[in-house]
Length: 336
Ligand code: NAD
Ligand code: TYD
Image (cartoon, rainbow, N blue to C red; front, side):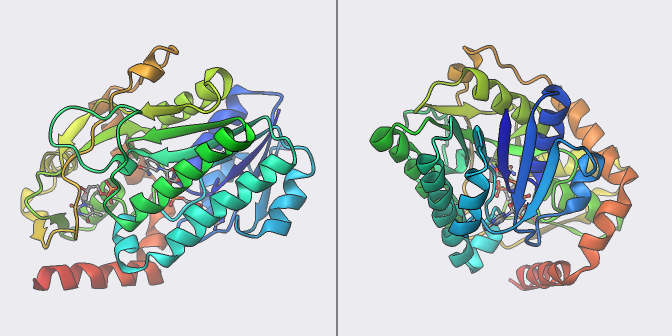
C-alpha cells in the first residue's frame, strides 16, 4: 500500500508515520509537508533513512505538485496538513482558510482524478462547537465558533461532498485534543511543561474551568489505522480519549508532577470566543473494535517525562522568532 501523508512533519502526522511504518512492513509513505513553523523534520529522525519513507517539501495548495505525486500511484491519502492553533486563527484567519479549506480541495480534486482508493480527512471535535452537558454524536449539528474550527468544518464537509457527489471513498475523523511527544510548544500541555521546566509563568486563560477531552496521540494513530481498514466510505467517526479535565486541574497536575510551585500559574485574560467544553460520544468507533489503550495519568506522566528528557527538541523552538511572538502575546494578555 502506498500512502500520501500530508502534514506529516507536524505533531500527529509524524507520530502516525512512525506508527504506520512500524505496523505495516510492506507499505510506502510519502510525506508532503510545507514545513511551516509547526513542521519539524526532527520529529521524523527515526524514519528518515527508511527506504519505505520519502519526504517532499511542498504546499498542499500547489495543485501541479500534488498532481505529480498522486499520479505516481497513491492508494491512500491521509490529510493532516493544516494550520492548527486557535490563538493564531483569532489573529490571522487567512492562512487557515487557505490551507485547511483550499488545501483540502486541491487534495480531494487530485484524489478524484486519479482514483485514490481511500481519502482520510483528519477533522476535529472543534467543528461541533462547545457543549455544556452530554457528548456530541457524529450526526449532531456543526457549530464551529472560531476561525480554526470553521475552516476545519469547511474541509470536513467538502470532503464529505466528494463522497456524496463523486463517490470518492472518503472517511472523516473528528478527534479530541491530542497529547504526546513532539507537540509544538504553543499547545497547552507542551507549553506548560516547558514553561514550568524554565520557571516561566503558566498563562491559564480565564477561570481555568474550560474542559478538554484528552486523547493520547498513539490511540489516535491506532484509530486512524483501524478506520483505514474497517471504516465505511462516506462516514464520520468521533475519536475521543474519554479523559475530560478542567484546564486548571491539568495545570496543577503538571506542576505537582514536576515538583514546581503552583504559584507559577498566572491567570490571564480569556481567549476570545473560548469554547467551554468539548466532549465526544465514540460508540460508533468502539463498535468497530477500537478502545483507547492509554491510561490517562500514566500517559500524561510519560509525556511530561519525554519533554524533560528531550530538551534538545524543544529548546530551539522556544528561543526562535515564533517564541518571541508568543512571549509578546502573553505579556499583552497579562496587561488586561
Ligand atoms: P501541527 O500544527 O503540529 O502540524 C501541522 C503540519 O501541517 C505541520 O507539519 C505543517 O508544516 C504542515 N502544514 C501546514 N500547512 C501546510 C500546507 N499548506 N501544505 C503542507 N503542509 C502544511 O498539527 P497537529 O496537531 O499535528 O494536527 C494535525 C491534524 O490533526 C490537523 O488537521 C488538525 O486539525 C487535526 N487535529 C489536531 C488535534 C490536536 O489536538 N492537535 C485534534 C484533532 C484534530
Ligand atoms: P490548546 O492546546 O490551544 O487546544 P484547543 O484550543 O484546540 O483546545 O488549548 C487547550 C486549552 O487550554 C484551551 O481551553 C485553552 C487553554 N489554554 C490556556 O489556558 N493557556 C494557554 O496558554 C493555552 C495555549 C491554552
